[in-house]
Image (cartoon, rainbow, N blue to C red):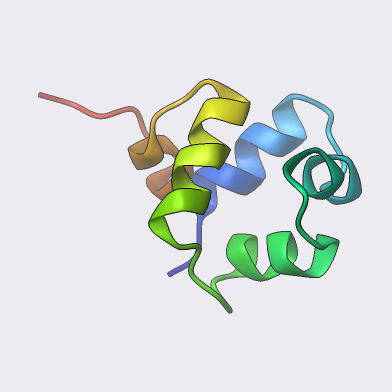
Length: 68
């Protein structure tokens, strides 16, 4: 599954893949795989990404805010 919101929020914040990867202690390639849907992050990584960007997991995956 391609993580549309992950790429969007990273670019909006002006962060490179390398910066985010280094901050989260993963490889740049792993982050690229998450963004392109070549690999799915596990639950622990989803939580870390959500905390890092101060956004919901739903947004990271869909690029949309959760609607009730």
